[in-house]
Length: 601
Image (cartoon, rainbow, N blue to C red):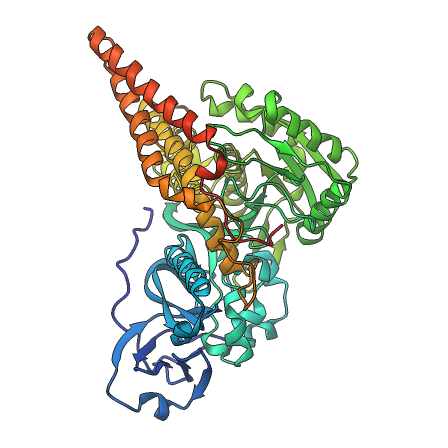
């Protein structure tokens, strides 16, 4: 059965349990004094203080850390980092967690809640404009506190997949976790710098944003554990509409590495896929349209951007197969054609276009077999990674499939789940759980567990990038579209529209601040410097009317068949909604939520 989430951790672990070399402290005590915060390990390790007056970090002995009683004492589960703003420093701590499962034998935790500790007493010395700026930055920190999909381990580097970690020297395990980690997948990389400089390795916990799903079932009366672990890259981190395509270095938006890990009879097998935005320079600026126009940015560096992206992939994963799932018509068609033209110049990378909406029209998930037939030989040649209980490598994955649509969410998740199912059959056949002619589809229970993993995986990645649940979940769960699924997709699409237009600009600012793409310093560009943002005060009213109008129109239209009055009501609601949208658009795109932080590319 698929494992259920455990309740949030409250009970302490045994204090006498020794730390592994390179591991972080599992249990921490936070002591809040008037002039300082003291954080000490309950595992018998290090301690330090952060002064409230300016954020200076002072290493302490356990005796010094335990001294004093005039303070508030609480339990925390990690220090996620420190950020310095105009008035001082803000320390991000993990206030609750829950068990997410295990990865390669080590416990994995999901961050339940976080909070910033303020060391900003210097705020009273700021100018009025600086105080206004600091207030905006602090509001962004509040958004960052609610970041979803964060995972960590105290004694295991979660950034490296099984194949990469198995091929590295054993001595690496004795290094601090932050030195072991692949920096691409450390969500709080920028926040950890001050802790690293202070040599507080025991407190430096790399957080990974993505999805971690785990389930167990039996084959031949023996347990099989399957883990689905995805990690989002931080090199072009952002929200759906404000981070598209690639930057000049070749890093793409919504780049995710997904590992399907299978454990059976002392064997561990890993299958890797990646996804990422089309690696061209393009954008899709929100303007209250349901589907804003895609715009390709003409730039002389475009060919080099594409080359850099695929050179990086080949260096990390080997031979790459690109699956482009976009439409061949409209704006998507123009973008797809431009992508295909650039791919024609890239040697040693196979490009396959598959018009998902056209071929799988009507929600026919099984038509993905048409795609698989084109790439089956190449995927089987790439294979998967297999290692035994002694650590002996039996098979290696020699390449990777890179899938994309426009968002790299819905169509991409359906396609990746199809390929993962094919690989899972091969993995279990090789491990002895299935015969060479069997598939997991022989068991409805196993089939349902697999589908559930991929549906939840798709939902979590979609929430992180688009703010809503994934669409087309029915295709993964049932292989076809159902009426309840259609209604859920409609609600998710409406939620995306609202969030993309009225909230994601501020969310993008929060990500840019946390990631270090915008650096706060004395004399830096004010978030209010660009002007025109006073109109943001109208956003709650405008957005409420628009969303309310759409909801009312949808409801009354469903009642049209009953009498003419409902039809008239529908037309009035629709007219009011269209009128408000037109009014907002006529007064400029500034009514949409747009990033305020300047100086970004």
